[in-house]
Figure (cartoon, rainbow, N blue to C red):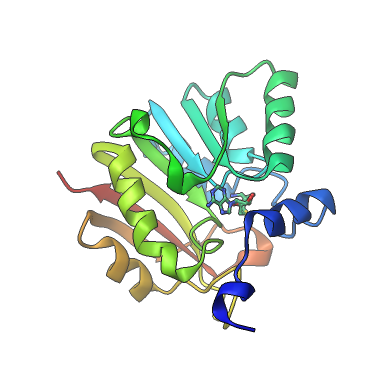
Length: 202
Ligand SMILES: C[S@@+](CC[C@H](N)C(=O)[O-])C[C@H]1O[C@@H](n2cnc3c(N)ncnc32)[C@H](O)[C@@H]1O
């Protein structure tokens, strides 16, 4: 098989939702994000969550006063999340589209981009594009807060993310404020997640 045909496409992600096969879904907001919120590290304002899936982070932040935009190109994720927001009487903008094609009405809009298991879900060749897009969408000085998955395995998704990967891709556009192995990770990801807090350079 050539590299192109091995690639994960939108329909492959959608199949996970159709078959209720979402091994990545923690069923709750990732505990490190709750700690960061308690510590007041997440700037209250407009937050973008790319590849939000069923959106535990979207719900948590919407409940706590953030103006949340979640993006996912799987219909199964978006429908589930919109229903969850409605059931809880919460507001949030949920976009059913490719993160890489957000139009320029989103440029410089967000105080915070928060993500887990999205950087590892996209193909490695898209990583620089990811950096350019997050940078484009954040306000000057905005934060990217991410849990990056250090699988230590070949192939993917999830694609392995090392400290060097993060430093190499982000250093030009972002100041790395924090990059360390996370201690509060969910059991299945213990010692396998980098918590990155990165600030967009002006
Ligand atoms: C591994 S899942 C993680 C979901 C969520 N972040 C979580 O941790 O529960 C990756 C998600 O990214 C979505 N996705 C992958 N590539 C995407 C893209 N280019 N644009 C929008 N969503 C994408 C998939 O549909 C899937 O819901």
